[in-house]
Length: 334
Image 1 (cartoon, rainbow, N blue to C red):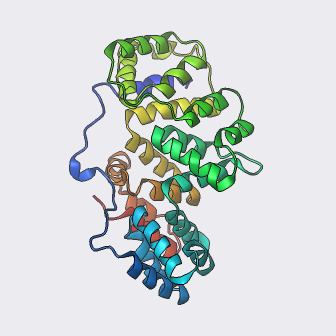
Image 2: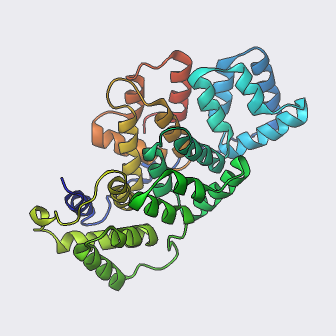
Image 3: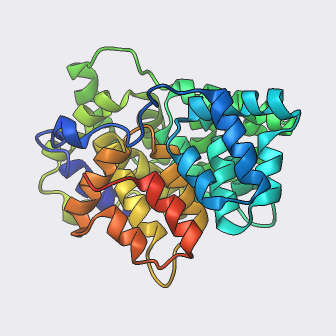
């Protein structure tokens, strides 16, 4: 299927607007802890680390928000003179260690590390680059950029530029700037103009410009108009040839504009597709969406794939402590 055929199919899914989701199926899976005391948690963690009590470590950390974990880190260092991340690193191993250390970073730090890991080494993890950069808002992108500089003493845009090329590089570098117009009111005339421009586009630059600069609400309207204007054009939508990474990025932007939780439900499915999981993808998805929109992702996952996300993870037959922490992060079925 050509790029334009895929793009038109995605736009058609927006006709009538995105499906509303009930409040009880929306929002984060994890909430702030009532009566939270970072000093007490730090002391309990110190005991658990000394005795390598993995169960206590999992139970405590998965019930605390990221903000609370940062306070625990500060209290731990004050009490023991040691860095909590370092001590957890020594006490744990395997995927359990990977999950716990991911949870101890701030969201921006964790995204920065995921991006660095996607870039460094002999190959590029394009899907991770795309996932993070197409789904984060301007404020998140700026925080990631700052964390990246602090952690790695280098510039994210420079690293992305040195590891990519062509139109794929162009769209990523636009996204790295974090300059999407998020505050402008929805403009019907602009939506009509954008829909027409997309219909008439014969080069990638038009798609990159519109999909990376408009607010997602504005894009929803433009894609709806684009679909309405091209109802009978599926067979003809073959003029613009795109393939590979840039095609995936632009289609992903359209999917995020349609429904970010649906996009993430699909990413969860892909992380468990075929023989065995893709641990880095599954961990990143659970850790990064746990306090944002995981409830809605779980609701849509079940609707799309006929089983709960929790059941899908259990069917992967992960090792015991790894499964325990993943189930704790996933939370109960909606």
